[in-house]
Image (cartoon, rainbow, N blue to C red; front, side):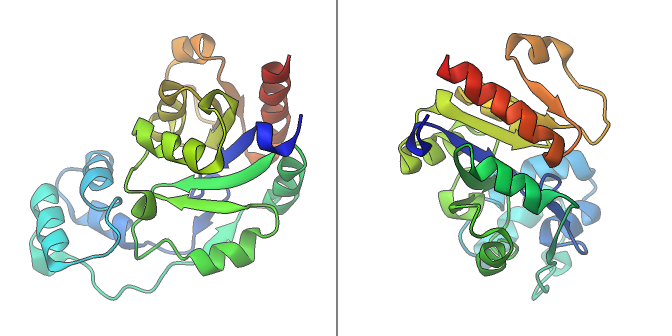
Length: 220
């Protein structure tokens, strides 16, 4: 297997590490009466896919979240990403198997590409934040964009992430393979687990073996 034949895409928050403090999306979700889960779904469509925050975007987001424009946080500092223990070692191992990229749902105020380069180089070769691609997971087009820009068939992508809906359902619906980072949680849909041959790992370190399994199977 050569590096051009396969690709590993990684979610960031909850998979590689966690933000040190709440960012824009977290603050908006907390302010919305919709509740965190529904608020995040709304923001995927109206906030995470825009390249800049304009007044029109603020108005649209606030209307969708049912909050006042005055409640929209402004000039927030970027909450730095703190990598989980073992992430660097896992990235090194994954990059020995195939090219590695990130694929994340993130606002343009939180993307912080320069810090990501510092944290994840040389093991991660490219970053695909939703605010740049214009598509947020679980939209098929988020995964298709990665496949097209990297010149890889979707069936040759293994995506690793901790969000069942965005990362796992999104990846498998698009045609990629998937490894779910459970952090000890119960599998939400065991039926899909079997049908789509989804692998379950406790964390990214554990996921290395499962990614290797997927890549080996797709080579046979």
